[in-house]
Image (cartoon, rainbow, N blue to C red; front, side, top):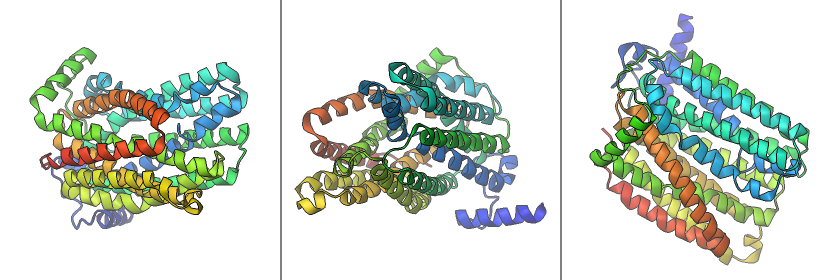
Length: 437
């Protein structure tokens, strides 16, 4: 056991470029001693969560599920907003509840288990669901899955802040992104292997594997050595809302961060429309979509560790540089319409730019996650994360609806130009933020 711990510590020090695994800035000594062990459990949890997310993707797998069971087309348009906003909007209401728990990992575990059960329910619907009733049950199950995802999300960040020291969190999230990228690569290969006509059984298998991924996430979270924290300051939902709004008024840094984060939504909103342009060239078969998933996985494996180490040095600069990259990718995507037909009619140029945008999007996510965790303290971290995520959920619904209307009116390529302008504004906003000390 001792030799195992020594080997684990050495690998941890290699991954973090840290010669002293006991360097801890803002976590208790007991947590510092467990940091290498917890580091790898966080990695395993991220692997399970990312694999499950990809195999139950609201942008890829669930639309095919709706199509196979014969659900109405308008229901398909609700999948992504429910998946994203459903995970973000309720977080402010549960922040006070989580604050009352001295050990928050069990909230994380509960959220992961609920997601696993929801994935199993979706697998069952793939086998027996049909028509409008089946589609409605898929949407209802997705609501439950998204709410559980939000519960796990806020608890995960709070446990991260309690178990991994500052200047190590960005590196952890970077390696997590790389491991998750490998999982994405496997998922894309599976999707390509299923070919053009995946049947009910194939989709059910994918969703059962997704449930197994969330089970791995739950088991890994349960094994994390978390030191019980303070429970003072827990609020009910209404008190959390009032306190959150007062934070926005009093903490200008937090307000400006949320402005930058809102503008950085341009990277997330651009991805499906760039993929849509590629799908128009390759058709809607699962093999073509699997190609986009594969290049996404490769991009994540390459980019995430680099972004993570840079985020530990300056998460503000990572947000700024990722905003610049988003603007460039959006401009490149919009310009593909003017390429010679032998290029623009192939899916590969779109796949390459999609991969570049995935690299940039990982920078956006790692930069804003690290910045948010670092500017908060153990006393207010759960509330900061919940408030920021709730605001982003509202904006996701509002801006997503506006962007969808513009896309219907203008088309995907002109929309990418608008998102490029938004990303440029995000760059200016991130540049104005102070460093997270």
